[in-house]
Length: 360
Image (tube, rainbow, N blue to C red; front, side, top):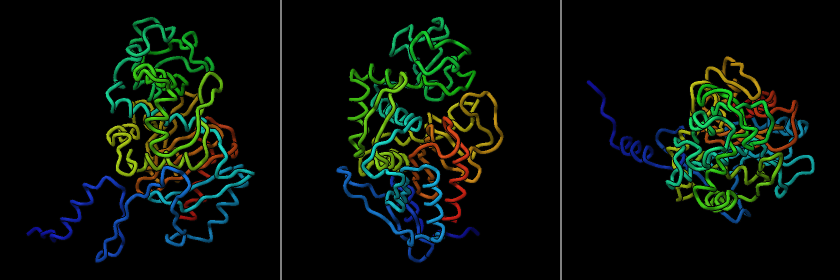
C-alpha cells in the first residue's frame, strides 16, 4: 500500500516548486526554513552580509585562502550565498571602487543581452546573422555565410577561421568549415553586439546600459581594445551580474532575462564541445575543448569543482563561478595567477582546492 504524503508537506512542495527565487530548506525536518534570494539596492552603497560562522565551514581555512589569493595576484574576491556577501576582500592596491577588465568573462554579458533582445522579439538567435547585418559581413561566399546563425556566434560554431588574429572585419572573417561542423574560440561572437544594435535601432552601449546594466545597479563601461570592446567595472558589479544569473534572470520582482534563455545558455549548446553553452563554460561534462586547439580533453573542465557549476572565464583569471546546488556566486578579479590563458587555467583547480578545504 502506498504511503500518503502528509498534507503539510504536499503544500510545502507545491509552494517551493512554484517559487521563482532560490531557496534553502533547513536540516530540521520539523522547522522548515525558507531563505529567499537577497538583491542589493540599485544605489550600490549597501549590501547585506552573512558571517562565515553562519555556515558549517572550516573557518580556520579562510586565512589560508586569502593568503593564497593575495600571493596569486588577485585584486578582488567575493563569495555570495543567496545574494548576501559572505567573503569580500581586496588585495594588491585594489579596492571596492577600482575598475578592472572582465576580459573574456565579459562575453557572457553579450549572451545576457542577446537573451533580452530575443525576449523582446527584436531578434531570434536561430536566424542567420545576415538577416540583421546584411550580406558581406564575412569574406565567405554567400552560400556559406548564410549558414551562420546568431546561435552559431553564441556557441562558437561559426566555422570561420580562428587563426587570423583578433579583428572581426569582413576580410578577417574567412570560411574554414560549414557552420556547426567545427567549434573554435573566436572573437566573431562580438558580431552579436552589432546584430542587437541593428535590430534595436540603438547603439550597443545604449541598449546594454538600459536593458541590463542600469536595471541591476551595475557600474562600468565598454572600452575599445584590439578591435573589440572590453567591459571594465568594479568587482561588485561583476557580482551583481553573477547574482542575476544565479537567480535565473530575475532581479527582485523583475524578470530581466527569461529563465528559459538562462537554461539554454547554461547547458551544452552544440555537439562538439560538451562544456560550452552560449559563451558560458560548463563543468561536470564528459569532455571539453579549449581555445586555440582542436583537441578534445577527457573529463570535467574543473574536476574538483561542483559538477553543476557554470562559469565565465576570462584571460588572466577573471572568474565568475555560478554554483546552483549551493546557491553560491564566486568572483575573482586580478592579474594572471600563474600562466596567462584565455579561459581555463591551472588556477581554477588550485583555487577550488582552497575553496573545498574551506567549504567542505
